[in-house]
Image (cartoon, rainbow, N blue to C red; front, side, top):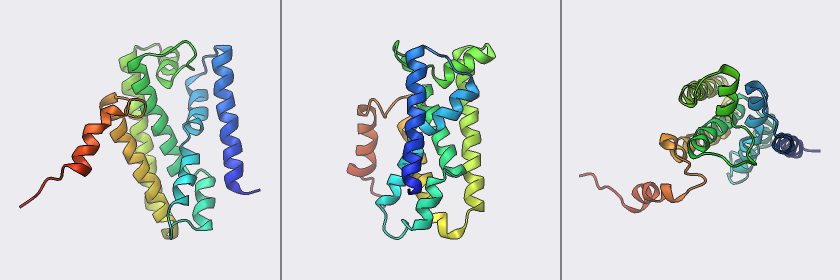
Length: 188
């Protein structure tokens, strides 16, 4: 079977783990949460899907690279989940939600919400450093594929700008998108 299939199967196992945590009202340790959430963020699967839409970049080598969940893809998954968890924590949660990384960090380190958000934001910055380091060390043939993943990760910083959840509440992004693409600024 292809590595993409194995990644999809692996992702399903992580989703199932989160579902079990939710049903059993289990509060994982921060480390447990991180191990599962970087994959359940959907980013590793999305990295493969992203490559499908690109002509010259979508080589077999690039697909195998993305399916192996290298540091760039893994760190992107961490960033995706951390930014989402910070925004979700600020909005509040429902009874069925799994404990977020913010809540796991608070419980494990006996700190308040704001302190946990600061610490998790610092961990997201560390993930960006991992991405930058990996981009400098990657094989040149894989750099275009890596750049696609990095650019997608960059969009997360816009979607979750200022701790807002632009993914769930897309209306927040409407003005920004209009400003970028529909209302040009002419430079003389």
